[in-house]
Amino acid sequence: MIKQISNFLSTEELKLAQEYWLIKENFLNKCLQCPGSKSIYADILSETLLKIKTPIIENAIGEKLLPTYSFSRMYYQGGSLDKHSDRPSCEVSITLNILADKDWEIWFHELNEDNKININTKPFSFKTTPGDALVYEGCKYEHWREPYEGNKCMQVFLHYVRANGRFKAFAMDGRKFFGQTKSQALESIWNKK
Ligand SMILES: [Fe+2]
Image (cartoon, rainbow, N blue to C red; front, side):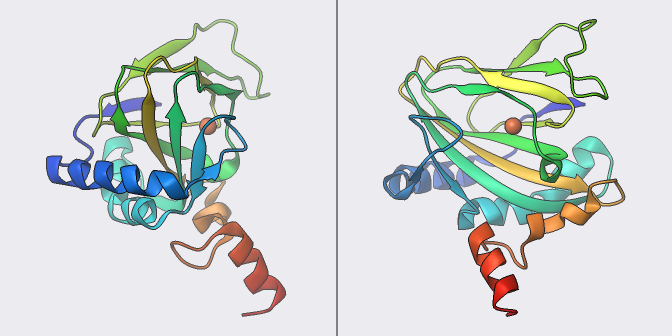
């Protein structure tokens, strides 16, 4: 299941998010998954969206969901996303277009149960404009982006599991609260806080 949600952010929310990321851009980390890009796990604004936008996504897919984590990435010219499929915490995901100075397709190719490409299907792509989101099942599709031809593109990823699904134990991605990083979550386990 892949579905486009237009106007996922209102005009005011989008304006705020764009200004926020143009400031926050200077405080992002080198992205380990996408060389040349910058990213952050559990940014507070993205975690807020992860929390408050849950009903919109539930409505789009017709199922109850549990938030897992957010991830936010700024891509630059030439940046790309290698072909991959996602881990269980990303059973249902949103890629939310915050800002982009050029259209950029995200590609999908369906996987079989054994995680191999379904050769009976063809890859297909979507384009979104800022404020729009795409909801997709990243464990069921290999997905990727070819090198970006614009200057800058910010995408926020909101990840969920089905509340009654096989991955429900991955709720909050093993964290205790919104905004907590993975290392903080692990530390709290070790220190029994
Ligand atoms: Fe992914």
